[in-house]
Length: 351
Image (cartoon, rainbow, N blue to C red; front, side, top):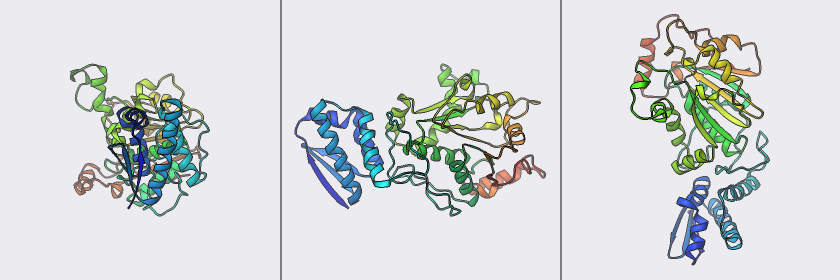
């Protein structure tokens, strides 16, 4: 454990350095995994020696900018974090974007490690308090497919990490500035209850459908940072219907619960993909909530697009379930012999 101290006697300089709601300070703290406290004009930084050295250097540079300009913006904090971490890490597997817009998730180590069959390999989300890595071989192949392909489809039962690992890989890419934006998408399809009976305005009615995506990203990124990035439009969580007419460049786009999209909706979603973007489509074909007689867009796409070798297809099964042990038994009990997903796409195939 190492510690360093900076002296700042002017409260206004401290306020400008820390930023609104201490967002500047939190960005440095979260990305470098250090503790930062302020008392009596003394800023103390503690943690491992390398991180303390980097954090102190960044704070000194930002302090100098405050003295010169009277204020600093979040983009300057992100730029300083990126320069320091970039010098330490060198180049990443995918080239980082040249522009550095408002992102507060800079890399602190190479963001996209070379794919490896070792499924213990960690996903670099830049959160010292939260370490994420695949827990089964199938999950490892899923993460590897996302890193290697611009479009990945994953079909698997509840609890196998389809959404969680996709969101973690998106945070990794955002942190490394390989993309500018994360877009999390879900169909607003009712599963037995009526949307209209929920209280509140449209946003309140849609919140239950989008909540699982927000829960996943809040587990990986500090709440204040999520709020800030959403305000800056670097993270967007929207219903599938709101995707029409858009083109998303340099974005990481995740369609969750894709089995509840129609064929036309799936076509509309897939064609939103713009330059420099990656797309992950995940779902469980055994939990379709569409009206009887309506073809699932996920099932149709898995059959229609298999001949496109640039698209990765991954199928997870009950052996990849990482929730409570009972979930294995529940999934097995509900899956009848000759289940619809069998043979739909090859297990863990990534071409």
